[in-house]
Amino acid sequence: MEKITLIGCGNLGKSILAGLLASELFSKDQITVVDKSKTNLSFVKDHYKIPVEDEIEPAVKNVKWIIVCVQPKQIDAVLQKLKGIITEDQVVISTVTGVAIAEIEAVLPNQKVVRVMPNTGAAKQLSMTCMAANAAATPALPMISKIFDTIGKTLVIEERLIQAATVLGASGIAFFLRFLRAMIQGGIQMGFHPEEAQLIAVQTAIGAATLVSENGTHPEMEIDKVTTPQGCTIAGLNEMEHQGLSSSVIKGVMASYEKINTIKS
Ligand SMILES: NC(=O)c1ccc[n+]([C@@H]2O[C@H](COP(=O)([O-])OP(=O)(O)OC[C@H]3O[C@@H](n4cnc5c(N)ncnc54)[C@H](OP(=O)(O)O)[C@@H]3O)[C@@H](O)[C@H]2O)c1
Image 1 (spheres, rainbow, N blue to C red):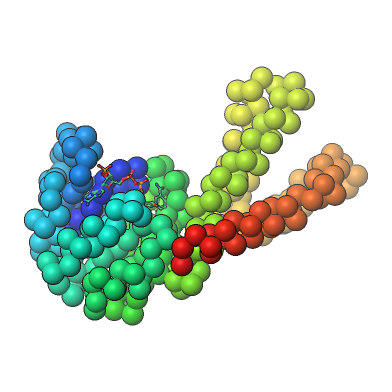
Image 2 (cartoon, rainbow, N blue to C red; image 1 turned 90 degrees about the vertical axis):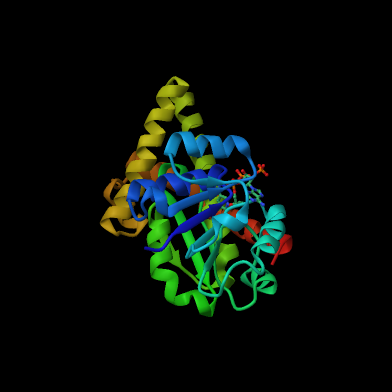
């Protein structure tokens, strides 16, 4: 059976590991974790009882799937270590923000390379993970989708859309949370204690997202169901639109997209 190695087991790495173990896609002896941080290695060893290494070389031997989960400034060192020790049938899966497939191929030519963009929902197995592969790795995408389905939902996209996926999916967490905060503030102004307002707003947000997700409906169809003619919901919605809600959200998404395109290709 094919093995998997996680290089870097920080915030995201731990979420991926928890998802993998819960899914039973791989048994514990088929997963290896390598990390520079002794604290992370002890945590993984004690908590999950799986093999750990502090060096990359032994950790990637006879392993099919190599997930690189380090900070952008750390990936060069990892790729230099992989160079010359991995073979063409091994698949390098990078979660590293802003590092293009071509940059990885420049160090590891002819390698199967996949770039994935999860979000912090991964910690609760609720990530939205977008992924793009080079030609050599395209046949491996079904298995890589299975791996990342263990931490939420996955979508295969073209690499040209990875920046957009970062804005919509990863920065999107912050955008939704800012709207949630505003709802809580409104609730407090109407008379709820902050924790009560938060409970109501959070559960309502989960309900709204679940309706659209499980019914497969467009948001406006679910909005119509709660919008009585001349009622309070339409009064609130129209005032939000007069104040520029949809327009400011779209402008914010586009500002974020313009910014990400200036940071790194
Ligand atoms: N967190 C998310 O939900 C999320 C979402 C989308 C994308 N990403 C991307 O995923 C990557 C990882 O994010 P993170 O939040 O998990 O980072 P993190 O918490 O900093 O974890 C990275 C881990 O990798 C270790 N490491 C660094 N160089 C190494 C090497 N040469 N060999 C072995 N281990 C090494 C680090 O050790 P030291 O601390 O000792 O250096 C650290 O424990 C980043 O590029 C980030 O942009 C994360």
